[in-house]
Image (cartoon, rainbow, N blue to C red; front, side, top):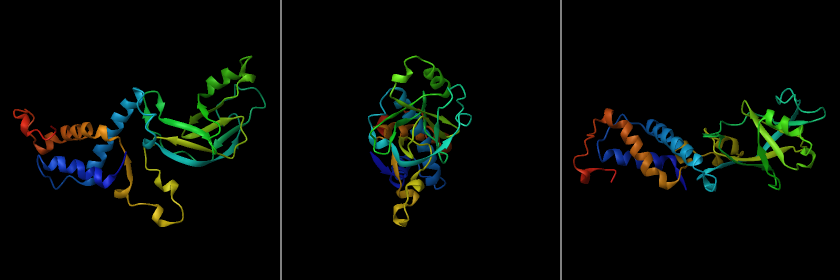
Length: 225
């Protein structure tokens, strides 16, 4: 579920106010702590296979332009002569990393008629040496220095759906200034069921500076209950 950044920081601030109000805790600092632990929990969820079904957690780059490059640029000199390569024209935003690599839900053609599978240059080179590779109709991509490379396609652009480790809203803005929202109104895609744990982790980190009692002698006064 999408929640605004401003609402998210207010939610955590209200939890902290129940313990001790501190004027030096800025929204920017609280947001950095929220994202620190949100990313940690999202990586854990991805490792447990619980992320890919949550479509709303992913951002879409609907039209990423491709250009022609050679085998050297694609780090795939082991592929037979004649293989052509496409590369994203511009560097892609940083992906959020999971336990097995970047958290990418889908890479497809613009019309989503064909899905492109992730691999590595050496793995793809080995695939091409197989006798049966000529029967393989799948398309593949790999990432190098935040560029995406795709061999043997004639497409001009692709679509990417992933979790990014930075704000990509500026890439989606049009000439209409209302399409670019203020930072506090930007959607923060964190599942509701993770918020209680995020709040607890933020509170735990802030305990020393807020001088919050940690003995938990009276659970009835515990703001996390």
